[in-house]
Image 1 (cartoon, rainbow, N blue to C red):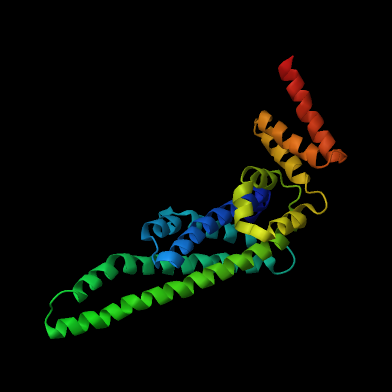
Image 2 (image 1 turned 90 degrees about the horizontal axis):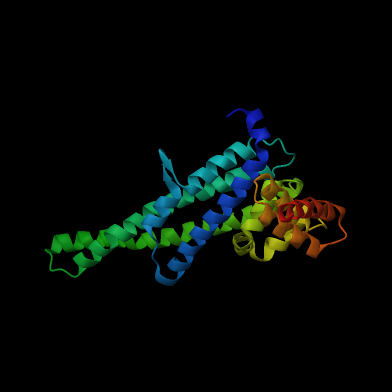
Length: 256
């Protein structure tokens, strides 16, 4: 991919990066919550999330998108480099988690079964020693989960800074509108700060941008809903009034 092409498609890369970041964080945190309760991870879920070289999963695609975006955007400061490194670190830690989950899921039960069997003394000693390694896998998983959670937290803070110049990105606005529940879930208490970073003192601009993107995609009734939310948030904003007028004109044309 050429740098010129990436810069031309920058709004799409930003949208894809944030979307996949939230989706990956949601999947991983769900797995971590299960581990907190049961000390078990699903190898299948982690395998699907990471994927393979010829069939990349969501997290692998996020890593690639991060490389393309953060290494070509030419923004001042270090937020791009930090985000690129953090997302890459999350990917590699998840690879470790996948391998640990495989050991835990496939060999843990086998060694436990061996410990209950009548074995020759020498084999019993070997199985007991090897079982200790399997037990240590759980400690490795705990450390890896802690690191992934740490880096997701850093990414959330860095993204607020990185996205400060994306207030006029219709694709980002549409993502924040269409996937609002997911973004709120992932950012939690940091969600309002994220919106302030992007839209400043005009949070209604999110709905304006979403409406524009939906209009451009031909989803006029959905655009009308977004424009209505913008108007409810701030009916005095000229940008809101302009967008609402465009959508209302279309609706009147459809009715007539």
